[in-house]
Image 1 (tube, rainbow, N blue to C red):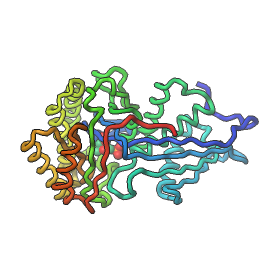
Image 2 (cartoon, rainbow, N blue to C red; image 1 turned 90 degrees about the vertical axis):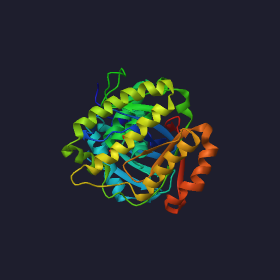
Image 3 (cartoon, rainbow, N blue to C red; image 1 turned 180 degrees about the horizontal axis):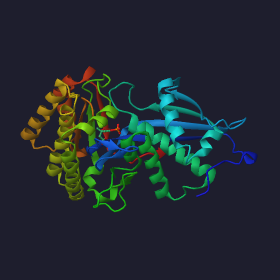
Image 4 (cartoon, rainbow, N blue to C red; image 1 turned 45 degrees about the vertical axis):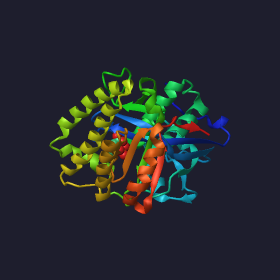
Length: 359
Ligand code: PMV
């Protein structure tokens, strides 16, 4: 492939690109990595709709000699943010060998989330996928190298993965798998692949109400958590278990078997947190409120027979997954019995979405 370098005698006009990209919630969890953000086991997620990031990338040709640096201004909710700028700059610098044109430009990023800042909702998946999509649009605008929509999505997913592993799954509507698995031709550790055509319609109308048990910053970051898997005595059996569960879940989601779905999803959430408790040093991210909610969800299911299930990310907040037809009943249950466990009663209502959109 020819090197992606702009011709300075024919410089592009200044311009901008804007993408909105959602978060995702893993059903089979990615926990443990190696190399450059490669997963120890394949994972499967639902793409969300309401929790998303809008990222606008503005560009203009730089004047002056090539100093090998990327010129970047960064605004988060219209305010300069040095911590985020430095993270994004590291990410972009890592891309220079394949995207050398980035250092020929002055870049300005304006980004913001649809959910309140410090609501306890992780934004790395939506943020890194939105940025990756902007970069792919930029490459295609200058060089026409990503005209094929599948090639575009694959590259966006791969770049998002380099920014934050789980972000690679946010590129696709409804559901995605990241990690090579024999069952899904074309699946890869380098990028996620779409699963929408292989899941029952019931999952395309699924709710995910996120109960914010605590907004506090996590005591152990995901990055540190992944690293602790290296010394975890259960690591190898865990990776094998994740492969088996993924294999079952693929069939279950194709068939739309909700009780079997719920069993695997809840087991995965508890396994993730059990792995944290078995790490050295051990740590817990669940809070008493998380456990209280889990107990009440189990009781609600026993009492009503409704297909309501929980999952957890690497944090105390509880995601409630259920088919759209239950929304009135479940929202009433949340209001009457679960909001009391949430910080300031905050619940982020979300649902399975159509994936990112260029605006
Ligand atoms: O993408 P990271 O490095 O933030 O790790 C995400 C890990 C989990 O959210 C716990 C699981 C997953 O697969 O999303």
